[in-house]
Structure formats: structure tokens, C-alpha cells
Image 1 (cartoon, rainbow, N blue to C red):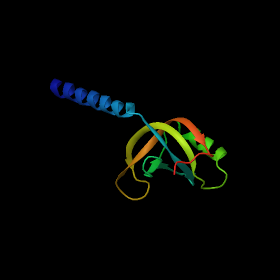
Image 2: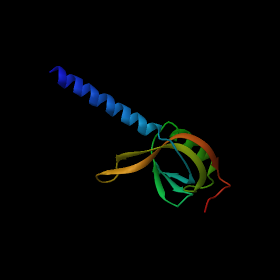
Image 3: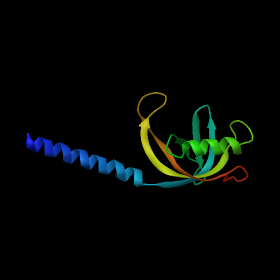
Image 4: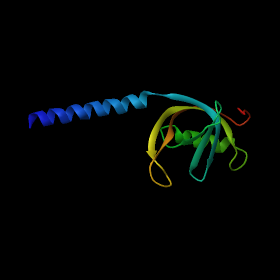
Length: 115
């Protein structure tokens, strides 16, 4: 019984450590951001990739700054953001999808474009 408890604690600690390492893997993205009807998408300046944006500590700030910077509904606005990728359940259908969780907002500039 003691071995099972020790093994369980070891698995738990390794799992927590692994999850923490994923969150420390910060990424900076630049792109054209669009927010509409609770859907946020970034089109990467690097390759045009469509990246789904969800939650994160900086997401509310990003939405607020985007809404004050855009001129019309569904306008794309240049942003520089920081955060990390995570696999989450798809909003529509089954399975998982890779999304970006925003932790930092560095720049929101409606006058700049990247493509």
C-alpha cells in the first residue's frame, strides 16, 4: 500500500511539473487580429496561419484594446501578443484543437499591417 501511495505521489508531482513547464514555454506572436461574436482569430504575420485565440490572463485586455482600435466590425488589427499554445476541446465537434492563450499584450496598432 505504501508503494502505491509513493508511486501515486510521484506521478502527480511529475505531471504537475510537466504542466508547469508547458506554461513556461512562452511565445510571442505578431499578426492581424479579429474578434467577432466571441470568436478571436489571429492571422500570423510570419506565414498567414490562422490561429485561434482563447482565454488567458491577457485576453480581456486584448479584446478591449482591439474594440477601441478597430474602425468597423470584423476589421483586422495588427497586434503583438505573448502567451502559450494549449490543446483544448474543439468548440464545434469532437476532438482537440491547438489554441493560443494570451498572457501579454505588447502592441495594438490599427495603422500597421503585415501583409
